Image (cartoon, rainbow, N blue to C red):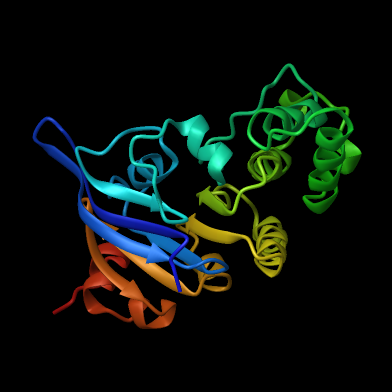
Length: 241
């Protein structure tokens, strides 16, 4: 099976600071991969390298068999890589519905009624249909998190990158979000999810990837990875000795 995404030996430094160092992994269509690590480990930088927000110093990003390493962010979005951001970035002066039309029109390349139909469908799937005509800047935190996800879905991604989308939510809100993300999995969307709320993550993903100081520490079945003494030490403060 050809991987949907292949990350090969990605390296990114800022001066003497190595943010990602020789990271490689792949994910097949329909899989869900979780990414964990302490703050400053390089997780969001990894997402930026995959989505096209920044370019690697070396290494390759292959998407659906195509080398997209030198593609800009909007070009990768058109090809099918969608992402949410840790801090929601809605177009605050636009309505929730208009926020989704941006993705449907410029990334999914739909026009007129087709773009509107996609926006309405995504609003319905993410529980935001009743908020369609509300200014995005007036939404609650949970609603803004849902809008961040909805914006990414409006681009019709084959690969969806979720960056700490559960952060700041109550336990009940987190449970609702997990149900929504699992429903996306059933639709066949491939996921890579960065998250500090590990119990939410392991209820969704097939594998975990652990990063520490820009280096891949471990990768594999979630519970096996979490039982790795080195992972417990760097992520949960449990001594490996």
